[in-house]
Image (cartoon, rainbow, N blue to C red; front, top):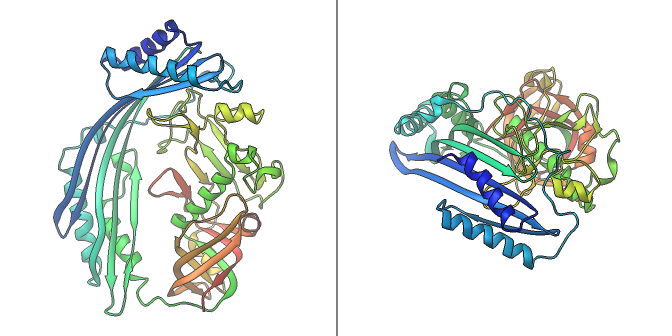
Length: 448
């Protein structure tokens, strides 16, 4: 089936039936995943999916319907349903599809599709996951169990058309491995976690390295204890630092900003951090997990700095919120075929610094290296952070004993000012949010 032609036909049909504007967003996907346990397959899933969402506008009234049935009668039915829902909806002059000024040429995404992933043999996942588990066990005899070990792959295609002249399509691949071993020293249990998620098979960490690193992270936490409550320098490892990056993006959501529900709302153009701090949302990042030529509304994706050398330079918008805020869409509409667009980040990351993680630690006399945060993270409205944390204590620049059952507290705006070191080790570990090691001048660590 020619899905691009189908998307165009749906739009033409909706227009013929009375839609002033219409858009078809079509997705086709195939995915597989496996979980293993004690050398046996615990769970093996293979699935295919397809669906199309139709958005129509009549006199400022919006209607939306979707289906996974591509038979002509079913497609006719959802066009009629979308028009009927539009007829019953309240008009809003801000409703509308992105127009010519927001549409246009797509940027260069580079390759997004790996034939090695799309042609992986069915047993690759099983073999890879079993290798991860075997390596995790072999790394240290104190591994006694696993919460989860798995692997998976995913192939997706997106097709889109609208009455405003937008037509486009792209396809992509994804492949991942993860492990969560449990270690015991006879007195207590500790879990570790390690993951890799890539578009290209050749970029993926080896199963052995995933298993070994997961075990190292579990074992090094054995014997963890609390520390006294104090204010000290705090260093976040890249996995945890990516949570901090996500919290910043949530506060830079254009809708939250418009509703004054973000601590960043009044601060555009202000310096919030040192010149070494640059936070970027980049829909065109080469090989990025969220890289695509266009967003969920057909708007070309782009590189949007949120913090540019420490200055708050912009927020993330979809078309509707941009109209509300009298701004321009940044190509950040996120969606699946069965949902209306909403604001979402693409490849979101804190740019790497020049110092190695070891250098950042060496400069700390006494402090806390955080390897896991537990709880909700930062409140985007107030900027307050209070979360349970596990990690390792730093003494004279060296990682010493493990620490758990403490709370790390701070405020987003103060934390930005206190970022005094950024590592050279930028990683996208398990998703489209990336971060290097990040050091804060001081945060409150609450323990005993």
